Image (cartoon, rainbow, N blue to C red; front, side, top):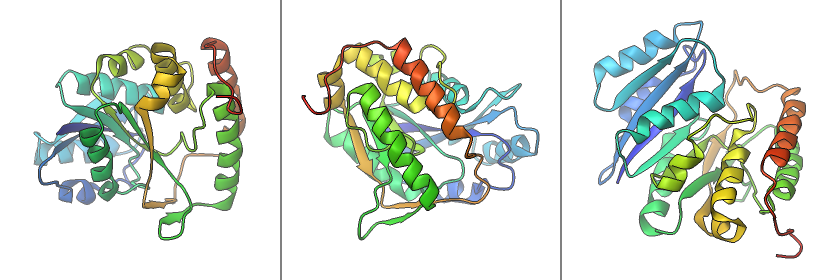
Length: 252
């Protein structure tokens, strides 16, 4: 399987672990990376260009002239990735809070389950998993997940994990064809658009939430406490923009 992973980058000069990307390699699958420099004001562009120069076949760079936010940076990157006709596309957070070692199980889901079009990483605190997340973010995340599930009519556990993979299908390309309304929780809007295309029952069968084995909070996160309020506003926009008839969680 050939996959292209989009990595949105905004002022990541000091946090981007270029060596981790250079070392990553899989037998049997080809994984390339497309880094999107989202109008960074630091030396991120130079770091990314150095990666590209070292291995232009594996590392591509898309420079945006000004900061457009993660949602649009990811979308622009995926549109560029689609043009190369890989089997799968995805996006991964630049800080590698989800390490690249977690990517193979995502690829395995798409390879072994043809009905699945989306694989979302899920940070589930289970015994035997190495999930290190600040309590405040964990509990606010659980509240947010409940509201998101009610909005979508699907029992989604974790939409905000920064590790996602998609089959390169016509429906997936349609999902990313136009800019997102949401700046803060565009991951939810991805699902809302997919539901509008497929309907709830079919969408639910085509989405897989995959618990990641390792996830660590990384210092320097750009997420702030006030972002929760912004996310609630975006959730309301999504609710208004995608008025699909949905089943309730209590009465499927």
